[in-house]
Length: 511
Image (cartoon, rainbow, N blue to C red; front, side, top):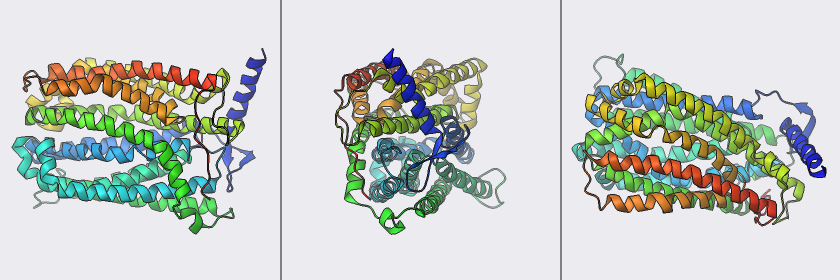
């Protein structure tokens, strides 16, 4: 009876905290409440995040369409940008994905500290992104030999060199987007993608669309240059918007703007302590994925084009609800985790959480889980039984053969992505609380299932005719296996927390 009363009291406290704004010095203002559609509330943040992820999904779809109309043989080349992005994900999912346990802690940290952490992250990501861009540009020939079909490798070198510098801008965007979501400012990532999409529309219409200015002869390299310009404009807009909002937030605090914006060792240590787990997880997962991709590319241009088109459809518009719900879930799980850490004390390294505490912490993730389940079921029924996938694939590739292969891919593993959508929401619990557990579940999936397949494909006599027989088990099977693993690991995380056996990372303020 007492435990039930205690849970209701704690839940009411956390629900009340969610309704209160942060004032300038990081304390709560008890007289200020926000509506459900505010960016500081769960459902309000979903609206912002849907708009944010929808814009680049539309652009990714349109870019393939334009290139298909310019030169259908170069559609697979545009996937080089995607594979460069996979390498960049290692740094973009390293420190940025760990921010929700530190910058997202709005109960135990002051606004000054959270802003200082964000600037430290931004400087670090910029340096890493620049370094990676230079490496890709220098190694364009080696990259093409691995990730571009033989038919178009020679014509793809310039495209890769141009696209390589998108790594710098993506690193900046990842830092600003993740940190500002943790600061309850999803309007900043929305501004980044809005500016990038607006610039893209103008340049696409003027240079490569069917209504472009007469006399122009665009190539795939033209599209690469446009994409780079869009990424750069978006990154600049995000940084400027963040500087403006951080200056406004610090205007009522005793900390100067110069002090808060200067990166420091304590802030970097806090970011690395959380980010080392997400960095390792991303490095292992993407290394195995690129290993498999090099095998797909070796199957020829038609097969590689079909795989690229499949991913454009699946990871484009169809994935927007999953990404938006994940972003909101990880943000608000981080807030609730910070509120619980604040109650038990910053200095506590091992604490026992009641089941009421655990239920309250995971509540945003469970909400996202339920919502995404019904959305994915609806999309699966619509896309599987309307026959629109083949037409859409032909529209993007301008190749009947590639469209046919894409349809085969879709029908055989699309249902597996329902499990992916669900496991993504459950993974936010680990990502926003104790990232080491997030690393554990990913290692289980990749080492126990994906790695054996990576080794097997080098021994199997594969060709374009039988490759999908194996690839569907690799990619589809990994999604189903990952769902089972995340359910088990979430359960262990909850039990360890309930027994007081989980080790808490210390909370330190750099300013």
